[in-house]
Image (tube, rainbow, N blue to C red; front, side, top):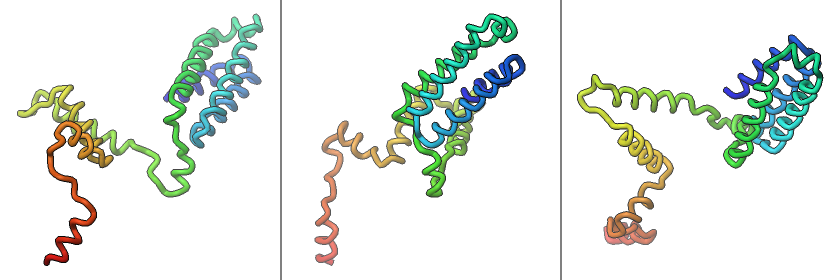
Length: 176
């Protein structure tokens, strides 16, 4: 979504300064490509380059008056660069996932979750969830799906049930 806004700003810049506008679009394409391939460091470098292009445009007095959205454009670029820097450890290599046939989109999951939560938070339902209850339920479901639930549960209730050892199933089979 942030890249869409940046591309729109670049299209506006093309109308005033075609060379810088096209260069901005090229850099945005490179940023997107690097993010798709999980290379946050290169994406940040391209954000710096884009910021320099925009600073050059600001220093050109004749061009500055023609395109008044240059400051917001520069702010969007700085915010996007900060976003990438803060989240670079979470940026995955979608190209590699796609290459191996793995799922790259979580839209279908998000859509389902939004549907279920919206239905349960609706006032027309006989049984409603509170926002806190829905949040806690999603945390539990995530722990279950990640096979982390039993570990978390055992921290709270250490005497829950004994952990089955590897040798127990063999002992049961031998007894039968």
